[in-house]
Length: 264
Image (cartoon, rainbow, N blue to C red; front, side, top):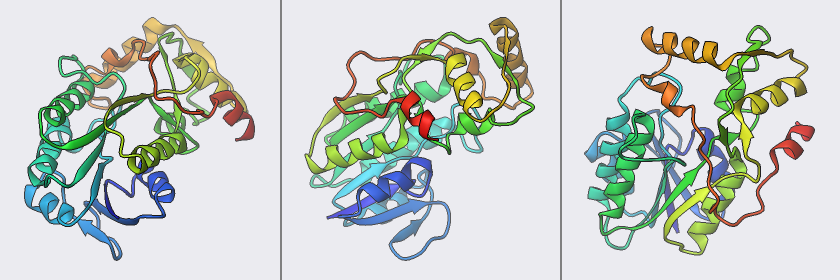
């Protein structure tokens, strides 16, 4: 079976590749690569069509960061990119699309809104699809952990909104399971712990021997708003500061965050 990983050499893609070793894996992204790699842009229909031709399964792992101002627009990458994939698919090909927990086409947050619009395109198509909505991913390479691992960044906002961080390799294993069992539909992924942002970051910094001082949430929001204004964070980043959990997650033996932390 030929499987194309769009964005397959990224953070999640590397883990997915390891878990799909029994298949013939191809990758697609903007950079040059070795054999079985296609160089191109998801925003180019011709590039996408060329890459997916002859594939049995296409797994779209592409997603811009919700907390860093993107080089390209969310709409082009998340929505136009998915439209390009759908236009290039044949009836026999399957699509596994990685979305995000909380994706909503009417959200004020552009990241979640464009993720939601992409889902609507897929649901309205004739494609054989599975949409996977993971909560925020964690591992030693986590974007948020990398940001808050700096010793001088010791003031952490006391944000109490909760989410369900999910281990990146758990997501990769679930993708492999959905692929092998030919499951279709929408699947929500979240770890077995609902954790506040402050607790999550403080626990990780403590494990690294770093001091954390609580910053009142109001001051934290002011800081984020200023970062939005000067272009460090995308517009409406503040809208992400809300509970984002699910009581109907995909059945799986999720890695416990605190058990993982003890080992890392």
